[in-house]
Length: 152
Image (cartoon, rainbow, N blue to C red; front, side, top):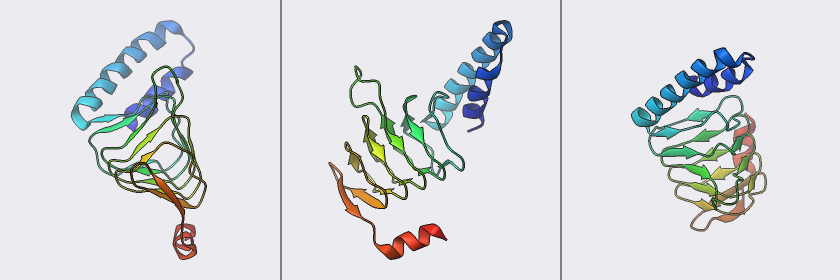
């Protein structure tokens, strides 16, 4: 996350003469993090507060992706494009928990307080207060008692 935040910060540098070496440093650090951890989180992706990567390895996030606050992703997660010629990635709401190996692809919207199950393949919108499980993902409403635990 430090390299991600550094990459976002460098856009604020007005002088092109200063921004170029800082951008080069960012690209070197980004590649180093990608090799050492297996996490690909470009600074073009929008990430909210309290974003958590639980386990490293095999995480790929598109630069077009957007995450809300309090999101959590685990190893093997892909948040990206469905087709190369369609540059739009998922827009993920607040309090979303994405299980290990899940794939969220295309121009979809994931609502608030959603749980994406492990190895789920999500190709369509997921309404708020739902769970998405399976391949392709089946969407079900969350139980009311599970929602109370999120609010605490």
